[in-house]
Length: 431
Image: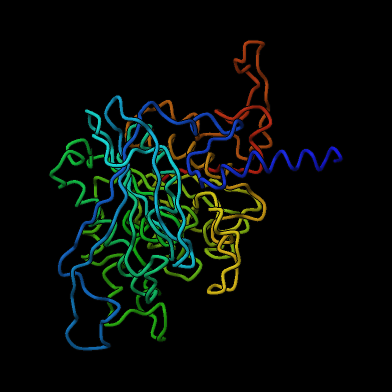
């Protein structure tokens, strides 16, 4: 056996157990500093919150009385667990095709007793389609740092429950508002440790669309006056409630939300937002994007960054990544197989042609920790992890023999030598 073949065989033997377990908790040796798990052992619970009397957008007629229903939203909730909790557990879920079963392995203990204390709340909101496990790597990671993290299955937007797109357009910010209110009013031992007065929202794709609206950047007039039938036009002007200037949108904006991370946010590419509507967003904002995103479209996401003039905001760019930048967990082993139903391997829903998922996840975990700690916990020192040389590769590594930065050191804080590659971080301040 030649040297290259021997090395490849050894690599497969190492990787296969990890793939078989579909681990979501991996931290690479070259991960940035804040990607490391925090001090808390964590628990996880599956819960369901039901919003009675929500307008049934899917079945709404073109005119006449609007039907309503009880909209049940299942969530996964991660939280700091009591000392002595044995870490580790699994999650049973399905792939992007809506039918193939898979099991994920993480560090959260199912239904563990919660720790004592009070912890800020973070809501994670998936794309169209997605489910509550798509960003489970981030939910677990942030919980170890002292957060209660809730990740939702948004009805009409999940792998096995995809329905009319305009339902997601109408319901996504309403779901986000309802879930935060539900956690704030939760009367149990998880509610007792949840500090909903300091809440962050992390949304991917359509989750980012909802977070921008929920944060104050309502829809443009173009979005709510479209006349052509199709996926973008909801019956009976139901989308109008999310428009800038509407009474419903003004009431939607929640003062408890102190920070928003929008990953690959959709909408500006289809004129659902414009400069006037985005100026209404006043929450601290971080946008995460791939420079080759052809779904939400990178130039459109740069417009969001430029037009959210009412707040301080960051744009983290994964150079050459597509729409899957940062958010999706590592592709489960079962996703590598071709799907007859989809006509392609579900791997494409999780992976990127250039970037390794675990590296993307670790970088997101690092920056999400810094951004949320800064804005939800008031840890001012975390700003040093965000205010960086714009192009990572322009940073200069200059350290003493003991590893302390010299005066001319401009390397990205928290990144090891030669590890800050393929990234840009830009900042704009509120006007």
